[in-house]
Image (cartoon, rainbow, N blue to C red; front, side):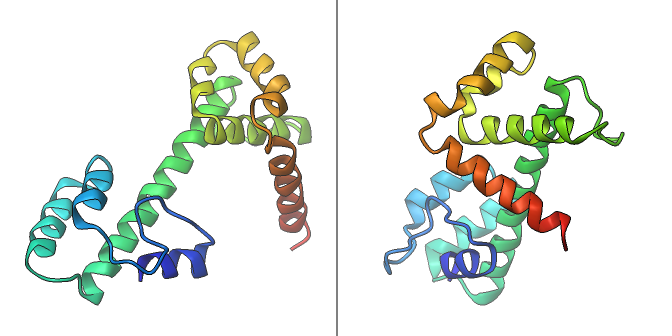
Length: 156
């Protein structure tokens, strides 16, 4: 149910949620989620899964929790991207070049997590941005998608 919800409503594929028609594996999935889900929700989920399958209410709580985690992670990446270029998230960006720089940095940190180590090293970060298409064979397609998305939002 969770996989169908996220796939249909968000276009998300979340590792650890079965998409092959099999039941959700309680032991592997709770291990995957344990580090991210607030402890009180995790404890309730773990207790409940030991006794019986999840009901609609539990699935709704889990879906809302996962959405919240994804949102928080996105904000963390965005904050890192702004800070990496000494920009404030509370001030408008000066121009489209700054927008593109922040977006590319966000996508760099998101798609190639090891590049986050360069967030306080401007020269190294710019090199990673320049070499992104070599380090990630999908980089050009990702940037094309980002450009399409940016254009669609601009003309809504």
